[in-house]
Amino acid sequence: MKLIYEKCGNYLVPNLLPNPEPEGELRKYGMMRKNYLENHHRGIYSGMLLEGTLKEHLLMIQEQAEGRFDVIVRQMAEKENVTEKLKATDQMSWVRKMNSIRARADEIVKDEIIYIL
Image (cartoon, rainbow, N blue to C red; front, side, top):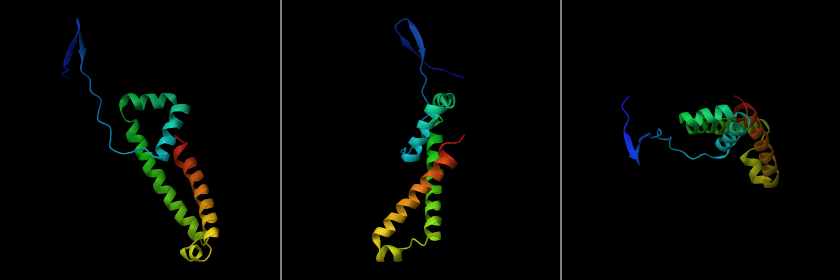
């Protein structure tokens, strides 16, 4: 392994560069996973942070959670007959039912993906 050193005063300090982080923005589920690891599994969080794999893991969890959320919402809406026809005829009822579906789907995603190891 070839290291490049930089002279800093009377000392030679290795010029270490971290691995580049993957591109992507952390959104709701990625931030929730980060907070969960940071507060409840400090060792895993610190290890991933030091290895440079934390953001990659968070983006993967975020993608899985968002996909699962969309599938659950679609399935629940079909099962409960929350359709575009209902939206056109009774908007308040449609909004009420969709908010309920989204809240339940959010809880399922948290239990299945975010808050487990």
